[in-house]
Length: 390
Image (cartoon, rainbow, N blue to C red):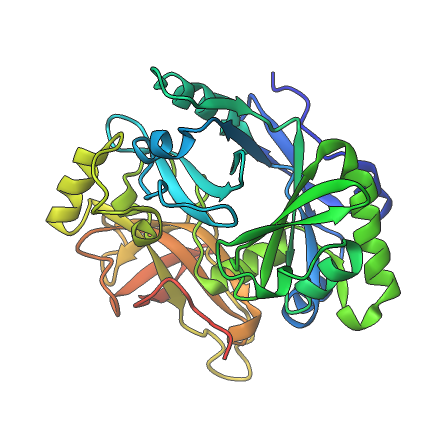
C-alpha cells in the first residue's frame, strides 16, 4: 500500500484555486503536483506572453558544504565542476559504477555551500550515495529537501515578477543560462537560477521552507497588482507542452536509471569528456568512442492528419505508444514514445520525444507510431527542439 503523497506547503492554496493534481513518483513515494488550474489554454498563453509560476513540490535539494566540495564533486559527477565560482551553476549526471544514470542534477555554487536540485524522491539516496565516497575530504552532504522549497517562473515577464516581489534584484535581469544570484524577501535570502527549459526566460527560486506560503502569496499579489505582467500560476500540463516544444527531455520521464548518458539525448549538456575520471567514466568513454548506444531519445514530429476540411481529428500518440518501421507495423517495435503533446506553436500538430533503437533514430527517418488504435506517420527531427523563439 502506498504512502500518502508529499504535498506542497501551499497545497491548500492550490485547492482554493480549483487545481487538479497528478501523482509524481513511485508506489512508495509520490508528490501531489498541480496538473492544471482548470484553464490549460490560458496557462500556456501566459507562459508564452507573460509568465507562469510553477510549484516544484516534486523536486528536492541536496546541500553540500566544506572547503573541498568542488574537487570532491568533480571526481564524482559527469560535468566539470571544480572551476565553478559563486554565482555559477552547471547540470550534471550522477552515475553508478555501471555508467547508468542514477540522478540528473542542477548545481548552484555559493561562497559557503552548493545547492543541488534533484528529484525529491532521489534526494535522500543520492546524498547518502555521494556521502559514502567521502574519505578524508572536507565535504559534508545532506538531503535538505525539508529545509528548502522550490518554485520556477517561466515566460518573458519572469524577471519583472521577481523584481516586483523581492528586493536586491538588480542582477536578475542580467542572468545567463545556469547562472544564479540571491535576492531578499524581508530578511530572508532566496536563490534565483536561470534555466530556460521552455524556450522562454526561466527563473528557478529556492527559498527557506517556512517562507513558502508568504513568498507564494507575494508572487500572486505582485501578479494581481501588475496585470501588465500577465502572470498566473500554472500546472504541469502547460509546462510540459512548452518544454517538449523547446527540446528538453526529463529524467524519469524520457530516460531513466536504466539508461546510459549516450542514450539520454542530452549527453553534451551533462558530460565533460576531457576532465578525467569520475564514477562510471570508463563506460561513458567507451560508448562515446563507439559513437552511439543501443538506443537514444530523439524528437519525432507527427505529420498533420488534417489533410482536408473534413479531416479535423488530431490523433496524438501518448506515453508508451509503440513505434515501428514503415510497412512493418506487425513486427517488433523499434521504439516507444516517452512524452508527447499537441504543439500550440506548430499549429496544433502532435510532437513527441521517443526512445528509439540505433539504426532507426537517424534524422529524417520516417516511422509509424501507434495512436488511438491506429497508426500515424512521424519523422525523426535533426534536433530535440521543435521550436525556438525568433
